[in-house]
Length: 509
Image (cartoon, rainbow, N blue to C red; front, side, top):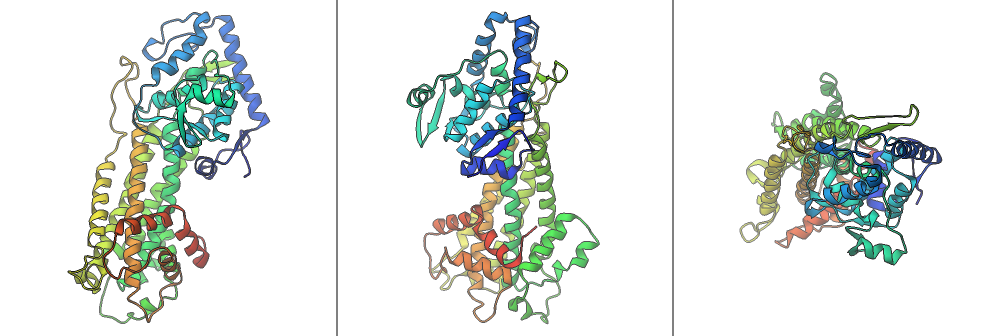
């Protein structure tokens, strides 16, 4: 697999995903190495000169005014990792930890952090050998960066903490023994440079944005399938409607669903029926999906910027020989974007669940109750809709914004914080919930399509139906549905459904 070369061009979200999920190897460009060496040389010079530099020859946070003798500079950096590793809760998933480690390296390649090549290379070695630290998910307030989780993440560099290697949990000291590695001794400023940034919230956010962009396309597929079996019209996808209200996402969703339902004999079969208009969950689907798509694209833009930003404090400028103290570690941009993302994706689940209700309710669909024969003896998709409803309600709770909360920390020195990591974690959970809701809609729509044996579905709808049926058989009578739902979720997460439909109708926007 080709390496992701850091330090020459901006890092892109697809590259991050490939490193996080597919263990794509990482390398550092020669130009980036020069920048790393230049910034490190300045830190070492300032230390030799006894200059007072925050976090290098002073304490941290509210202790910034406390001078630390240069003879204690290295111990100070070990202490900051030990003292700040105070996280709690379930460990972050491997893919999140790998993404955050990648982003810490990416930040270092900008030459503003003061990390040494040795430290950066050790992080790259961990990434490329499949070693990831055990990092508690809770404890970051999202300003001064992700201090607690990042401290846990980089304790193993100095032989402390816990790691997972080849599926085995072990102490960092045991890992070093097995691999014949020497624990690093951090130089002046390096402990702070490792933990003072937005890499954890940004890693979670990048993966959530990537999945959300797939999800809004899957929502268009699911809606198109539901529209056909509910005998809806394609009129609502007419481009003239969307040209006179030119929100970009709206037009894209309409075009997607127009192409997915193209050549549908089911839609054509009832074009002269007496129904005047479809329900909002069908008729307004381009407007709802499109608004979510535009919000997701906004979040993507924020993440694209953040993954290529320097978020340390102090920031080092080798070109002028200066350092500047500022607040690039404050996670407010990411926090706002992640709260917006959570709301946008929650709406995809909300409208999907209402389509599920229309599919299983015979008074609304004209189809068998709960899409199964021998109702009463069989409950069909009754409780699958309960599950979708439960997830939608959970999403409503998770959509409450985290970024509007703040609580002072560090003896009121850090008196406004972003809660960006909480926002990102919530957004990720909303995405996971919505994957399940859309999977249930896809299952219900495929079950309903089984009833249209004499009429061909639209080009994209037919392909979606076929890929679903290749994994999940028709529900003749009640069976264990949870495993079916998980199979449908796999089709969403591994992009098989999306790829199959796009092979038939072209790339979806």
